[in-house]
Length: 162
Image (tube, rainbow, N blue to C red; front, side, top):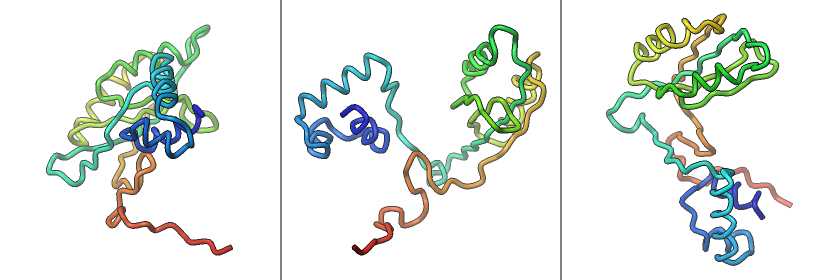
């Protein structure tokens, strides 16, 4: 039941316990108790609004920053990741496998200049950062399961006939 609740909330955090209960064939009280328990266990860590900044006049730039790190003996990447996570600009930090970068950061700023300043003033000078690569997001087509293209309210699923 937890997996079903989490899957639904991840796609739409505004669903009520009553709506979730109806979708998974449970009762509202059970769903509400499960949600409360998962919040207290930090399984559900927060609720967010997905904003399409392109539709308002406020400029917002998103970038992915790849970092090659020299890990610290006995601490691996944990210490540097914790330090980087404290920066207000940093939206997410991921430890990567099979990539040319050890860490990938998602950051947001008001301009390309803001992001470049962040990288060369705060990230690049860190003693364990060997190199950085910045990738700017030019357009978002889908984010957090939500289609951000025009006409995204239409049902464009492919119909499969039995």
